Length: 273
Image 1 (cartoon, rainbow, N blue to C red):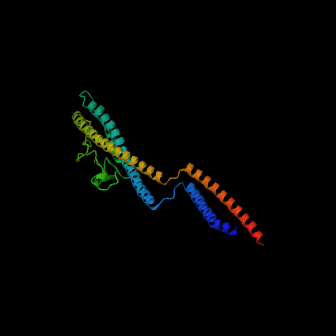
Image 2 (image 1 turned 90 degrees about the vertical axis):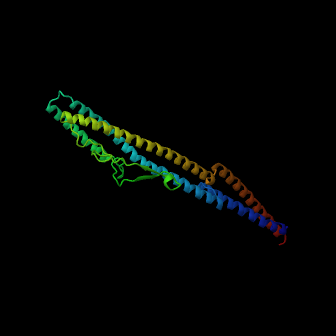
Image 3 (image 1 turned 60 degrees about the vertical axis):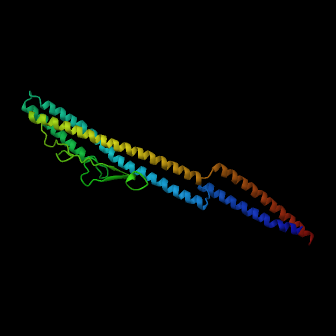
């Protein structure tokens, strides 16, 4: 009898240790929310997580670029409104029936509005980036993809707008409505300026549409990759709770068997005393 009991001891000891190890591992997984992965799974999770992070960074880059565009678009909308007011004033001043004093009053308003346009150009920037008046050194390139190279980049064109007659400028800096002739010339200049602004609005709108599509694609890829990572490494809480209960039950059985074995061993030894 003692030999039989002795033979059972290693088996029960192994079973107890195995169950205890399983309980600890299951509790750790429940606490961390992640599975115990093998080397291959760890490699996959690492690679996919890096890709998900990369696409997430792309969406952040695009959002920053779109902020610059949004501010530029808002400024252009306000500038269009003011230029239209200036054109209305020029049209009034071109009326042959006005007195000099009338044109002087119109000129004062006209000049004030022109200053507002200049201020809108100057203040249409975000963190030092101004898509309207960036100048020759302006270079706003957004990393809109993760593959690298020019195919993963989107450049926001510098509109290089100003009130002067330089290339890209709105030639209204010297416009005046103080005379009938000046007012007629101003009408033509303002019509050209409004046409130029309209073209630039279309340019920014097209760039924004492209960036929105890139951002949506990057967000979708990032979300899908993260979902795959989660499916690989995240635990099933319900299943683990059930497994933990089974292990605890098995541990109770093992401890009962050990207790019975100890009792039997003690009884057997008593016979030989």
